Length: 321
Ligand SMILES: NC(=O)c1ccc[n+]([C@@H]2O[C@H](COP(=O)([O-])OP(=O)(O)OC[C@H]3O[C@@H](n4cnc5c(N)ncnc54)[C@H](O)[C@@H]3O)[C@@H](O)[C@H]2O)c1
Image (cartoon, rainbow, N blue to C red; front, side, top):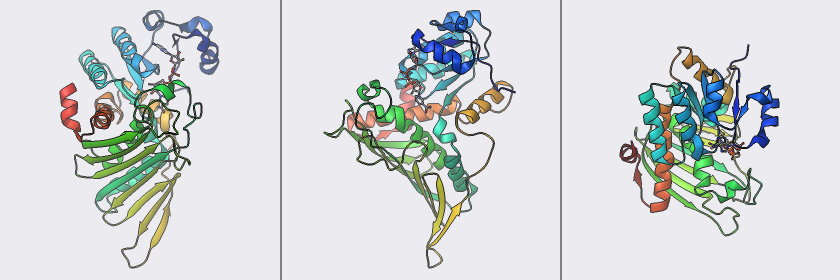
């Protein structure tokens, strides 16, 4: 049985309709350039908002007008103000919304999270994360518009890693210090490299390295590096291999840990959790209410990188709510 049944497609560019119809098994008569009209003419339970981020809010407004729930692509919106407006409107309307934060719900990251949270390895002290690529030339990382976008590394890439850092540390962020820059050899118009230091509200420290313009891709999408330094073990995830390391018995012991198993991961799991919620199940961990904390990390990082200051993330969020 299919989890969801698409009923209509909305895009402002009709060129995309033939591919979208073929992919979703829909007739061309179900293609619209206007969200309100699509929702007036078709009965829907929810919409998936996957337009460019600056257009998310208008899609959310339309969904609220037509009393349907929403699964929204990350990030929630293009500014902290817009994220908070969306959060407020959805809450006031009593609608359900969740955010597609796919990489956090990947098998390897979930396996590491479950190991840390098992408590078997002692208290988590600090976390290191890395996602570094060799894609400095236009066209090597998706469409050209990415190379023209301000804060592109943080909004397109690091936002996923902020949410992974929240889930691995089991905490929201307290402080954010982001240093970003754009090297001479980059074809990006704006900063595409970042070194970021965070303290989480539970005291765990985290450090993140993100780069688009390196000479080598060390840890690509889905192959990210995360290392959790726990009291009794170093838990290391690298290229989807999870290892438990410890020298505490006098010599280095290394164990490979099999990844957790379940039926669905990534977007399929996210969609299933969302649909279960609509059917009366529990609120998923990527609900809008939860994800506003990820948005706060993202836009606090942008504020930190622009101002050169350490940002108090919770104060920053309260200021915009
Ligand atoms: N979860 C992930 O891993 C992931 C990966 C890539 C992109 N994204 C997110 O998905 C969203 C789309 O990103 P993209 O790079 O695919 O964008 P894109 O520029 O490729 O646009 C996607 C589609 O939206 C259409 N569109 C443009 N304006 C619209 C509007 N006002 N209403 C309806 N449709 C409109 C475009 O014609 C295009 O077909 C963004 O929010 C982005 O951050 C998420």
